[in-house]
Length: 100
Image (cartoon, rainbow, N blue to C red):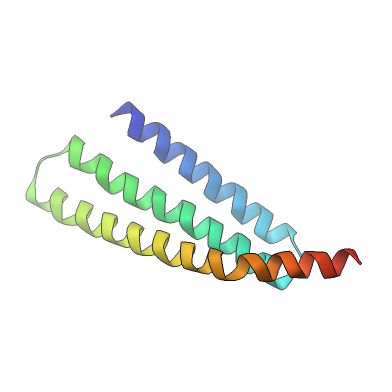
């Protein structure tokens, strides 16, 4: 599935982008906010990789491992989204205070 491969590459690229941005920032709440965004990107990478494997191979082992990847990716996206919502106002407040 070429569409899934493109999404996998984009999610991995966003993961690398956010991890680089995480290293470069100095504010602690903003670091956690960026880390949450990178968790969402990593979770989507793992989940999409599991879905892609379902289309490539049709064996029992593949179904089990792809299921594990999809579940782990979903948990990572869900946890990252919760952290993103929590740290967004804190990071915005921290940036406003740093600009003053």
